[in-house]
Length: 118
Image 1 (tube, helix red, strand yellow):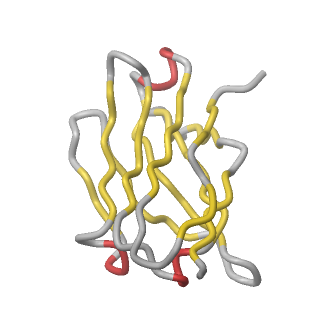
Image 2 (tube, helix red, strand yellow):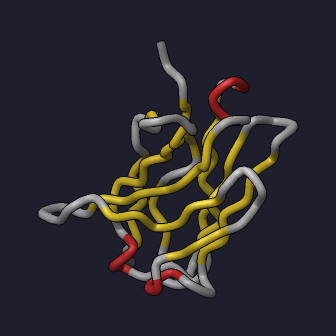
Image 3 (cartoon, one colour):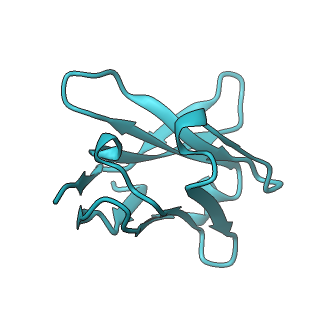
């Protein structure tokens, strides 16, 4: 059963923008910190940004000032607005929900390809 559904990837030129969306079931969304990870070819998956249930955000230094994460609690959806995209942002982007608990439970989206190229 699919818990997280992503959309919004694609091909964009350097300097362009994309917005990713990730819709989650309500029971997961309400009780989770939501994040976006990415994995480029030949590289490990890395955390890009995270937003907790109270709206506090954190970003990897390489995207600060360019990417913005936001959550809409009424729609159970988290967004990643990506501006000033660079070729090095090319990767498969994965939505993550880390549900509170001891231990916490991770849910993953299916991944969406973002390609930044001329």
